[in-house]
Image (cartoon, rainbow, N blue to C red; front, side, top):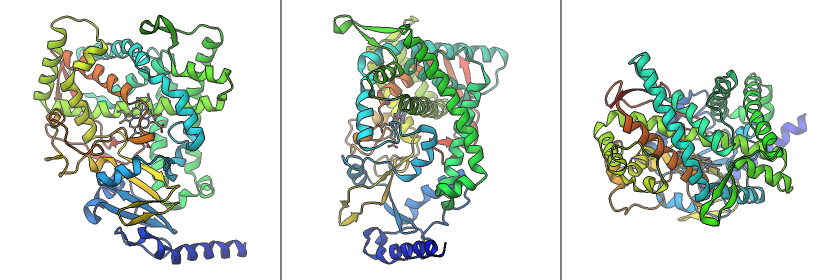
Length: 493
Ligand code: HEM
């Protein structure tokens, strides 16, 4: 035991004394104690306080801020030039350590994996987001948007009260990802398991953030000894049992040849499989992936494919409710496309919704569903005269760069017009879907889905906020969340 303690002390001291050769040690940041660094800065903070602290870092220390603990450095970047260098790097594609806290849940699926495994999986999964496949999802987006409108009408008849939009939208986003990507219809599922699945995601998110804030919980050993690990295991069980059922149900249909196909008319009528899960099951048959791999991707896509869009839409409805003039412009745009008819939406209709496109960009600028992303540096690189060494972590602050007053005058104001003007902004000034090799694979899916939902809602309702001008208190989580519910009133047109 004594020798172990001695080795740890030597390693820590060695790291401490060699840090002087590390350029990152010269950069500003919260006060660093010997050895501990800034490990105590975030200790014990609530998710709300943690979000605020992270946002304050740039105001206090500038565009490059360094956090450190036990000889490890984490560089926080806020300016577009640095962000471009980091996100466009072809070899620094490894996610930073905090992503490992989600690994028991998501496995080494597309979001977390790296290297050869990530390349291989991205190659298998990319065709699932091909234009023809997305086109075939339109029907599902539309059906679910119409069900949403029906349910809102029903709720209105029962009471004229405000609706808590986050859980409402989140249900529908889960139905959509299950039907499009997994080939499973879930909308009639009122079961406890669906509710538990969503509750477990919130629980896991808050536990991941607690681990992040409390450095001693970074250690697997100490975490496993902590009472939180038992709560974590329980949530995991709920998450996995829900997704395992989805896989088993689709596998049964796939093995019996009972899967739905899309006919690709533009390609001589050849058939394409509908769901991402079918593609994975086919890859399993060819020996390209095993069942555990399928599980990793299903867990990844079920989460990424619904929670991100639900968050964006909930903030979006809040902003629309607060801006009547924006709702009216969307309504007019839809009217010019559809007139008074109730006809369905085509891909070209979606392409014509230029104003709504700008609205969606402005929603994602103010409330990017993924506010920060992190990389573990595996190949050193330069930021001007600063060498970022192998082993450092770099965190890209999407939320802050998109609220930078030099890039977006009146940054806090909701002004979709800024995205209608000729775009002279730096290409990395707007990165809600990240950019470069690890960009969001589902971004076109998400934009189509958001257009369908928002246009359908605005065609049918005028939205009103509970309190005009109110803005939510945000908190750190796996995706951007707010501390209190968001209430909106939907008044039939
Ligand atoms: C408004 C909606 C969405 C936003 C803002 C968003 C944002 C992002 C961001 C910022 C990343 C990079 C994460 C990182 O580097 O850590 C990402 C990755 C990813 N997203 Fe999305 N996303 C959205 C919707 C979706 C949807 C609908 C799906 C699936 C259908 C999806 C699946 C994924 C996956 C699998 C990755 C990992 C990709 C890779 O590393 O190869 N996302 N997303």
